[in-house]
Image (cartoon, rainbow, N blue to C red; front, side, top):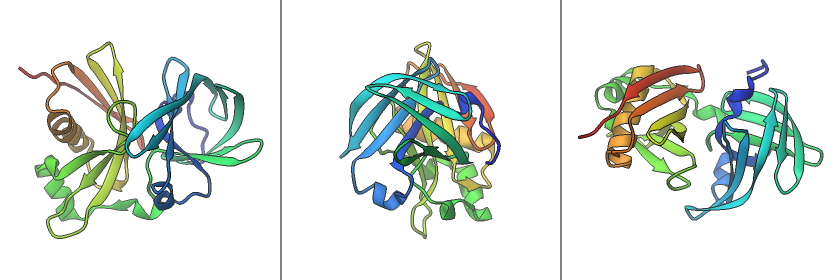
Length: 222
């Protein structure tokens, strides 16, 4: 991802790591999460033992090249987008990274055709895991083959608007899954199973962050 990102590409949740921290090592200590909202506000959280604690809140500015955080202090970073899911941050003292999930580049693969077919036919083979609990956090999507180990296939964050509308930013880790299948995964595995069919959700937008394709659907339960 060499081109300069649009300012709105920063919206949503990111893990905030030192640039040299391997994902596996990051899981072994308290994580930090940054949430960028569309109204120009941000919050920084600490995640430990599935408990989320707000560390600071404030406002931010991002023009596609420089990120300014105005919280307890004012910090300025030059942004280097490496991929859609990982951005480097060059600060005055240390280099940091924003990542959409705790994965490595080696985990981005094309699913085997039989796995693609199974997920397409039965989306509930994909389960949702909340690393940071419910609410403003990052959720992992994990595929459960019958004969192999679990496979992380993506992550997503959720924004709620107008009380009954959800905007979901989804980061695919694998290729071979169509947009309409990602929609069904969100509907079946997240809304129906993970959230137990919430009655206060009317319209859902799923944005695929690798391609910026969107799927919009009505979600109503009697």
